[in-house]
Length: 373
Image (cartoon, rainbow, N blue to C red; front, side, top):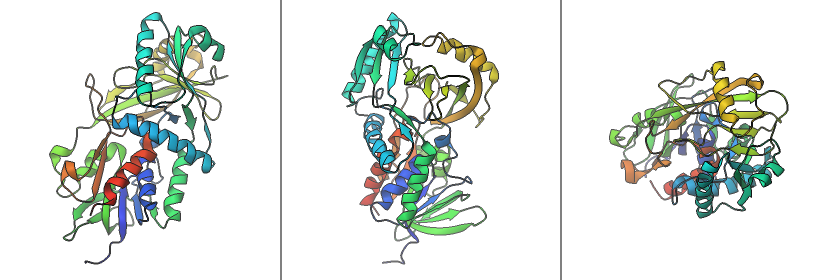
């Protein structure tokens, strides 16, 4: 046997998925190091999303998204409840705003049922308006299991569990690269002011938008196993004044995303978004002129919206693996069978419903690595 490792496992990325991976590894009795290049945890994809807990309605039968969303959502509510993290199981309406959309939401109902989503209901337009009086609905699906939550409080709780188990979450610590060690495991180079090299038996990469760059920095990682990266930008507008609905309101999905939807956040304000635009660079600006376009879209399900009440809020970028017009792929969890490297799990394309799925993704990554290296 060689010298012991500095850590049993190193995780690259302290967003929701990276921290969930770290927690799952910690729960197996391993010492864990989580590296984050930003000065705070959860500053990337995890801080620029809808904070929605997805039921698991849409995803293809047998896909990781379908499996992890339902498993992750159930685990997430238990976690939030037991750690006293703010959340609200407000429910969600998927709305057909006209007769032509009824067939589409019926297909969603069937898919959701196949995926094991609980307590779904068909609603007539009148039944939907009885729940949300300002809604324009020809028909709707009610998903009572959907909700919203404090994603940053969730990530702080995950960090706390890792640290309570003797692990470390280190900020301002960019991953510079890794090489395999002769007897197995990795030598991991960490940049920043406290630049160092640590040894680790296992390595998980969950850095969101940087997934491809991080994989390319691992010595011997086959370039052919690194999927192309596409940046899918989405912007949000906040509503001034009273929030019109308590439940999440979703029109039928658009190609490549779930479409611009409504949520009432934990502070009681209405928020609309995200849309989808493919971009070449990480640009988080919000064009106020987009308010008119948003208002036109929103009027389909809420005729009462006015442009004047929409104010630019924030933008997020999803780490997509498909470009415009291409089919939307599944989550990618690449273990030894993909890249040929023992003790390595590389995650790609963890976009929606990645936040809801995070605990299940973490468990799957830890389980896959538990018996390796």
